[in-house]
Image (tube, rainbow, N blue to C red):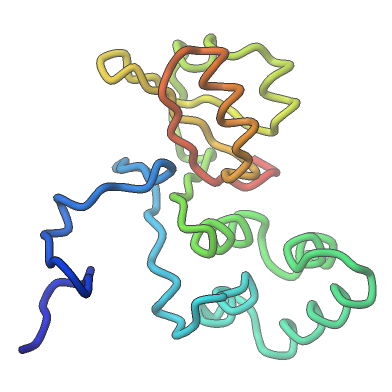
Length: 174
């Protein structure tokens, strides 16, 4: 029998809306939701794979990045930024897809003054993050981060504010 549900389980089939959501996944009309990495037919999808699939990077460019990365012991995203092959926001968006977190462009996002006032500048600079939305009813703060899987930073913000934290990936240059 064909399975029309994109999320399948060997034991129980549930509608997507009833499945528990990962802690870092956020629904927002302004955020680009990551697409499953499985579309690239590989569980260990790399940043370069995503950029190649999206035709943001050519195979020759990817090979150059791989060689330079191996020679210098730097990650692919660092090498891409150094070589300025593609815009910083495209690197951050692809990285968000690899990590399975939503991406947000700060250039097109309006910032809540309440959210900004919840964290001191030292915290923002220390963790390379910026609060952009505060939901008083849900007691949640949304933050854009250069490294949205920095669990220490997320926990620090949660403890500092007493709020639930929704983490989004953003370009470090923004």
